[in-house]
Amino acid sequence: MNYRAALERWAQNRRDRGWREDKPPTDIWIEYHATHAQLVYSGRCRIDQLSRDDMLTLDTHAHLLLDPGRAQIRYLFWRPAAVETEWGPRRMDLITGETRMPA
Figure 1 (cartoon, helix red, strand yellow):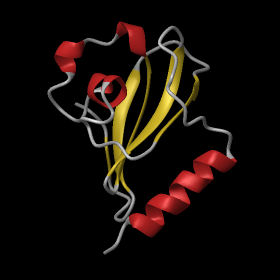
Figure 2: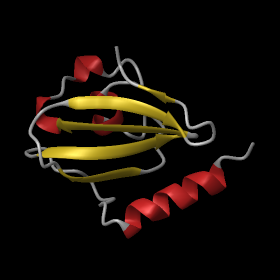
Figure 3: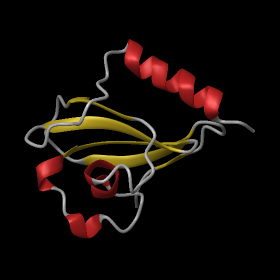
């Protein structure tokens, strides 16, 4: 199944809801959505508190946010977080709707 149409609809929905697509700031807590193929990773973090040592797997905040090109992230949406506590990343499949939270 071609996921591109679902991905484009999802991205437009984020834009319509006011999510930003520019580079996220490092000095505030943010909520984010990052897409890799048909998967959407969502979470909350503060980028300047992330460790580059965590960049080995795609399921980490650091890999997604510090080096989105290496992680092959197509879209990265963010907004300031209302709560200053780390959460996620949660992974959702746009085609099946399957969701996975980290252990």
